[in-house]
Length: 113
Length: 114
Image (cartoon, rainbow over the protein chains, first blue to last red):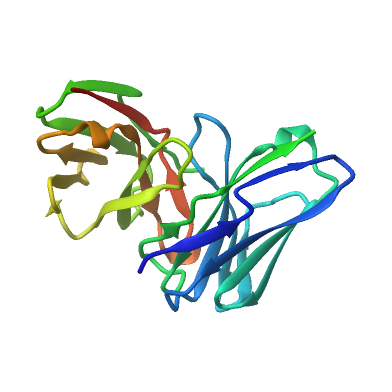
């Protein structure tokens, strides 16, 4: 089973709202990732968690706040977003966060009004 | 930063033909490469990978070739089917202090005509 699940599938929020994206995997992977993908562009890395610790933050604005409650769960808390933050947010996981395959979820389509 | 790019942004083939999607990379330190397929409205799906100590790797109907001399990666799909229509991304992992940091190419849109 190489399934990564993400909820919600779609999210519409205003610029003053607070919302959270959730990601879950049950493959025993110890590394989890958040990517942002704009239309017709490749995914861009935002954050990497390895063994539940943040190991990479690609200079993401503080209005995006990641959280890894345990090795199976990854959240992305959203606050005071801008319309340009509208995108597909992808979660991925891999064995340990080393040089290895990352498996992606279906994504959350976010629209900021 | 380092970049991974593709020579052809779109590729149109007939069903049953073989397809070749190319990718150029610029980071000579990259030691792991992955091809992903992304269908409309879905996340990227792993197709095949290759490490830098290999030149060729085969899967079911797919082959990846790595030419480190010219920093070139290609994905060959045999007997292409309409279900292969998607955007294909190459991605590289430079390893070292950038463990887990995948850099994606711009993508190639593959369209397969019945």
